[in-house]
Amino acid sequence: MTAIQVPLAPWACDPARSRGRRHPESPAPTRTEYQRDRDRIVHSTAFRRLVYKTQVFVNHEGDLFRTRLTHSLEVAQLARSIARSLALNEDLVEAISLAHDLGHTPFGHAGQDALNDCMRAHGGFEHNLQSLRVVDCLEERYPDYDGINLTFETREGILKHCARRNAEWLEAREPHGVAWRFLHGGQPGLEAQLCNLADEIAYNAHDIDDGVRSGLVTLTQLREVPLFDRYRHAAEARHPHLARPGGERRLLHEAIRRMLSDQVYDVIDTTRARLAEHTPPSVDAVRALAPLVGFSEGMRAQSQQLKRFLMQALYRHPQVEQTMAAARRVVCELFAAYTAEPRQLPAAQAAQALAGDATQCARTVADFIAGMTDRFAAREHERITGQRLLGG
Ligand code: MG
Image (cartoon, rainbow, N blue to C red; front, top):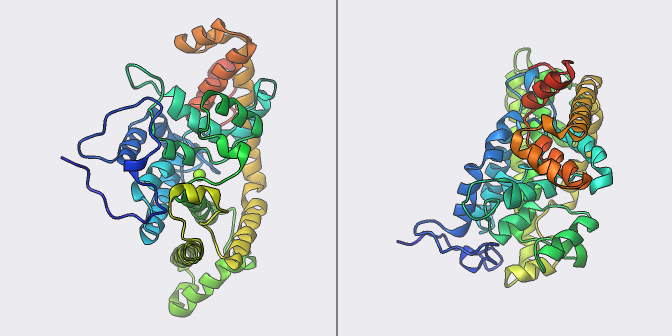
């Protein structure tokens, strides 16, 4: 038996020519290497936890908002649609998309910022690096090694950003590995570039949806965002009944759907034109060029406008800020409590924290906190401090 493969462009990542896994394995009979990666990610513990981790709204605020799991599925859907049009490797974009947020702390960016502050004296905390750490070190699923032993190309896509200091640390352990480009320049493969952009397209769209659904953002406010307003007008012109009372929800969805489609077409057209100009003969040629997957200049500017709107109207909304301030406190107080008394950790983590120096103790605590779901973090904080800062 052999794995069935669709034809790929010369610039796509070909699983038969993968740079391989850190621990060599023989091929699977029916799946390509990237399909195996995807399957390992879906079966990981960290993936299952994404269902109870949030981005903007904390779980207990409502059941209808995006979680990191549904976000990751939306990213995978968008990235796969685009990948097919560009003859890129759909299995690889699915693997990268599903893994891209595995290292996120509870409570979205507030949790990550708080943990980064707590870890300042011990090398900091960065969620992209943590996602790599999850798949390389923290998952305990195989008899002979830590992590889930993914291919280079999936790991390259997971490590979207990396600070120089962390890149030097990684490069020392894995010469010419996934951190090399952060020290010497260059891009990742096109599948990784695509997932990065699909992430942005997905969260911009679903944060409008969740923002309006929550009542924190109104359709009237969204009139100041040209990218959205254009599709809203188009939707109203085509379906006048949506402008009447009661039509708001369908109007919102129709406008978002049109916006998503146009962004997808824009990425496909722009990237095709760049590929036609450069015709990279291989993935290594892609890595040496400027980024090829992207928006047109006009769409890039409009997407940034939308991001600025969401920052000001939603992410900095007093109600969101209030929840996030409580979330930061939960993370910081948990970190302080565990580092002061590592025996409050589960037995395995306690033994690990007590076996090393202060930095190893702090890293063990950071890994434990980063792995928590929102509700586990809130309950654990309540158990330790006796205070209930967040519901759920
Ligand atoms: Mg994301």
